[in-house]
Amino acid sequence: MKEEIIIAGFGGQGVLSMGKILAYSGLMDDKEVTWMPSYGPEQRGGTANVTVILSDDKISSPVLDRYDIVIALNQQSLDKFGEKVKAGGILIYDTNGIHKHPTREDIKIYPIDAMEATLEIGNSKAYNMVVMGALLEAMDYKLPMENVIKGLKKSLPERHHKLIPLNEQAIEKGRTLI
Image 1 (cartoon, rainbow, N blue to C red):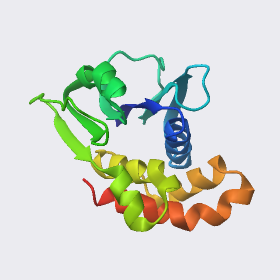
Image 2 (cartoon, rainbow, N blue to C red):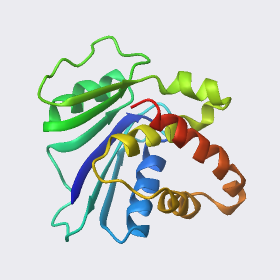
Image 3 (cartoon, helix red, strand yellow):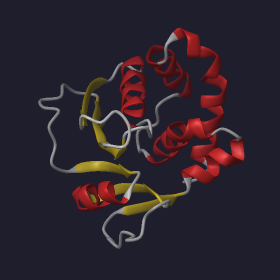
């Protein structure tokens, strides 16, 4: 098993956090993992992406040009990474703010409305966890939920552990979008 994933959007969407939680979740499931963030100097509003590789075998390099799964949370990310999904791979994109939808026929495409889903659960700060749920549902490799919760606990400061039930609810909501 090997999943090569990039999550891309703009600062403030929780892109890097999502990648870190995914990486820790893979570690908790005894997988080989790389986590490679990339972001501009702006803390919020600048572009951000993170590459995560989960594998049963050693990973030779965290640098990729093509991906099994691309998650694009804005038009710029979709334009940059949409064509980098391997044939047979998966593209998940948030429909908010997207004016040019993908048309490839050699990949699985999942448009999701993550912001609407956060409104349904009553907390827009859980946006990235809704997207995480969609990713977990779409992946061929099924990370056990208990390892995702362990990844959340490892990633979040202890003072935010009270938010784990909300994050779990958001993940479950995101799963329903696929």
